[in-house]
Figure 1 (cartoon, one colour):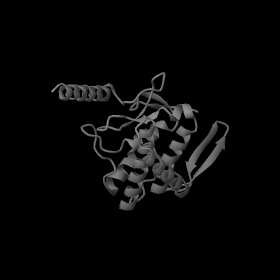
Figure 2 (cartoon, helix red, strand yellow):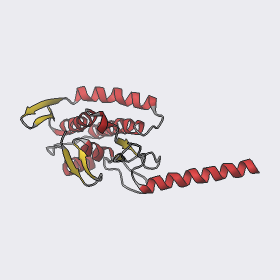
Figure 3 (spheres, helix red, strand yellow):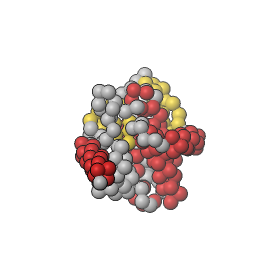
Figure 4 (cartoon, rainbow, N blue to C red):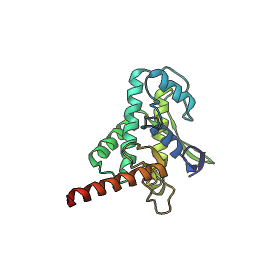
Length: 197
């Protein structure tokens, strides 16, 4: 599997991961970034600016809804990767992704350099197929796939690539880890105060 330079997500990441994380991270994150897929115009702009192959064609409001559904399904899988107890959500997401893969098919293009998955369709359908293809590529190697996660901080859930040696990373940044530690500390203190009262 080849690597690509992915500065936003911390350096070199295996092929497909950067595209996947860029797409998942188009959602609003409290105090950090705004929703990128607000309407047809903003979705078209994001697709045009992204590394996802997109011919600049018309984007409809229905396309925006489908893109958000795809993003939500991918996020549910990434949340499961950090142990969030979302079994029903992850199963529904897996079923959705299977249906989406049939709606937005890919073709295997074989060359001396290797095999890549390319969308069969153009426009938004092709762009969404590229996102699905990135997910397929990332998930093809379980050692890579288990490292593609969503931040465990419920105010964040940003997608990230876990670079820890033991794949035990649960937060996208030290800031999120610190916030969660402080919440846990305050919760323990409040519990202790309630028991001693």
